[in-house]
Image (cartoon, rainbow, N blue to C red; front, side, top):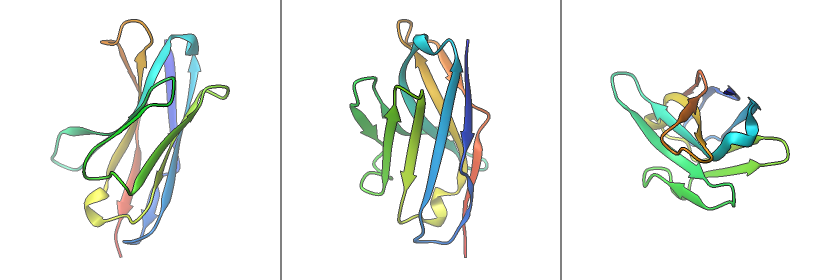
Length: 118
């Protein structure tokens, strides 16, 4: 099993920045791609960004150019630097890890709330 713990959420004004972090523990040798998803109230959980073990990244169109995902394999962490935040970025952000071999196996953190409001 892999445990994921997010940190860094909070309240930020529109146009501001925030950095989310996620630490993996447990059977980290099973971790493949890492990513961030978000779920706004009353909406489905959507992909924000993913990063492979080799560092290849993928972003949702809505955040491309504003968010940057990164990972440190030596520390088993993944981060999401968010800039130029908008009210529509308000959501619970979840850290995700895919099993290195069985890609259909997902691990999830409990989520951290990001609120963008003046």
